[in-house]
Image (cartoon, rainbow, N blue to C red; front, side, top):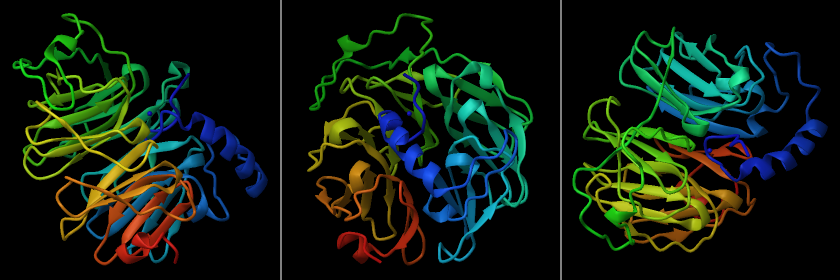
Length: 353
């Protein structure tokens, strides 16, 4: 995402340590392991990921919190997750079927839209948290996490198999792009196991899979995850999220305001100048084509030219933004401040309600 605690932060370990103190004062004692944690103000807890599918919002976070909204974020209901582990990633195949991942390699599955959850994986002895999850259909999927943790399932998540990510060099690494990527910088040996953190996995409009990873690594698969290619190195910092745009266009987000764009699925990148030096966590595309990127310290970047340039829309609360979820007439902002429903105009003015 020392151990990376959450999908959207590799450097958030210090942030979470500080948050633990405030949460301990704000919330009652955490229940025994295996019990769900029902927070009195769950919508204001530290929340880490979310999805919007077929009119339903599902948001997850600290202490096993799962929140559901069927009115585009106007009201929320907390559901029993059956765990107090931090939940870091969520993916829904459709309105009914979804999966959540988190600390202790926990994986939860729902078949009723998040109303109830069953634990299908748990491995606290491994000490590698999971950060993200993705499914191709209702049966085949991947969960990724710290130190190269890659789990695969072909039965809807009932059983998970550990796999090694052994990246291959992209067939054409001959070019040097404007961001400074160079084929000679590819340093994975044949059959070398990759053990850096895997932070984010997404599918592109063309059906390729992308993984944003630690140490400036970006992986691509064109065969559903059977084979992975390491794309040209573009910088040495970690990537935390990849935002697919149209066709093979994408944006990669990383540390210290580093952001890169590609028009060919990662074969070459250009650096995007940003007005911030904070970690960038996630992005979203609105119906009108506006691109929003959220990061630490309330940083919100807006682009109205397909990602060529970005303007800073600093949020006044200066709270970390983990996920941005566009709905019909608003944006659901998920992060350190919990979950908020804001219009684009409100976000442009600093996020005040």
